Image (cartoon, rainbow, N blue to C red; front, top):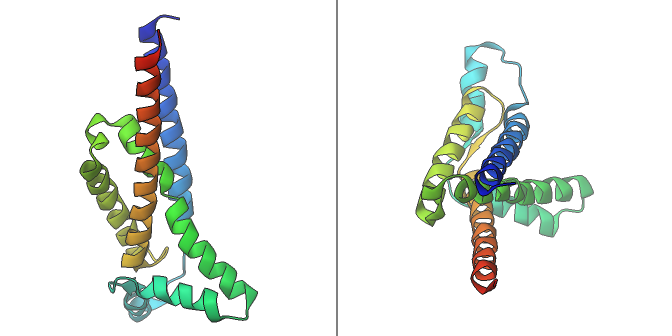
Length: 165
């Protein structure tokens, strides 16, 4: 296969993987729904589902993990913390892999940060979840891990190409 066809195929595979990942994420993040019983309920739910205090939820979950005797609450807290990080590792990997501009860390953080904020707002106003600054913090940590993984792999590939005869 010639080099152009290989590059085209690689680009096609990257896009397919990213679209698949994005569809799974949209389902996981927006697939829930809640019934709304009147305008008062809607706005009360919005108020109760909004957290703009950094580390409040993270510390609550850590406290639950350390002090609870109920396995369900411990598991729920751990899954929430770990899930918010792990789910976004691929996002941090895909951004610099697909978009050359995102090979600069600041662009990856900016693009993913805006995307995460939009998702949080959609979750809040459609009653499909909460809008929590701690989700943004944990998600961006996952993005950072994915970005770092991409950079390590890219550096390793460059070294192999340079040292290849």
